[in-house]
Image 1 (cartoon, protein in one colour):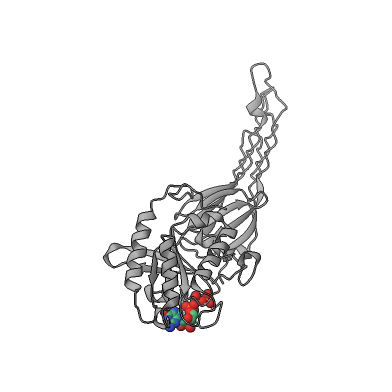
Image 2 (cartoon, rainbow, N blue to C red):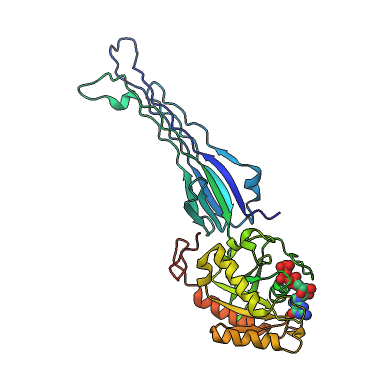
Length: 349
Ligand SMILES: Nc1nc2c(ncn2[C@@H]2O[C@H](COP(=O)(O)OP(=O)(O)OP(=O)(O)O)[C@@H](O)[C@H]2O)c(=O)[nH]1
Ligand SMILES: [Mg+2]
């Protein structure tokens, strides 16, 4: 099961209380204060790991609590700290506050960590309050409570190129042709139900990752079809490839299809329209009399959008497409840290 969104509750450890105590020993009158400090509560930390691929584990355990730190004790004994709790999450996890939805962290690199709830500090014991004028303080601090909050975790796949298209446009066929990914392919809509990644090798010039996203239909932003929940994955892509079916059996005209797709993306996040993109005219082998392709090419030329005709079945145009995508990905890979893309826009919504 592919789980790409979960809500969890985290509560860091409470600090231990400080202690009020005095030294009592035979023949030592007024031994002075010796109450120890409380221990510090442990933090809750999220850590990205390449060993997880989905947020499934977190769906099964929703609450994460760090135990209370120990209280201070007499004879200057400090309470023990409670250890931090480290929750592993897959690389590509975006963390939001569960209530305000404010972005807290974007864990993309292996080993990257973020404290999401801070442990409470331990209270000071009365020994810490002794001064030259107050040598027998009866005061000790209480431990501070650990932070607690709901978090919304979203997994955004880390692919370079996102394939956007109607159901049956040939997205899965294309990814299976250019990479070793083997998604299910069939002549009915919504064959692909979860995003799939494929690594494409661009001969000796390197490789890049392509994401096959479930098909979009008109009105997806209002929940039609599979909705636009999967568009979150393309927010991270540096390049988008719109797959437009130019086969004679296609239901919609190519230009109309392209415009609908753009509108759906815009309804989800207008920033997506600013990503560099191109059009792939698919099913070239069954294009019929070629008028559909001609119209699409003329439209793309007017809009100064690259348009690459391909057939994932015969292989026509595929090597040119891979080369083209490789070049575009390398050109736009320059990223600045913090989830910002080189265009200066955050990829957060
Ligand atoms: N003739 C021809 N048929 C193709 C080509 N590409 C895909 N098809 C066919 O089109 C149908 C749909 O292909 P898929 O790759 O499953 O389409 P998809 O875009 O992944 O569809 P969803 O997963 O439903 O969104 C299948 O029957 C494919 O065999 C092509 O280049 N030429
Ligand atoms: Mg598919």
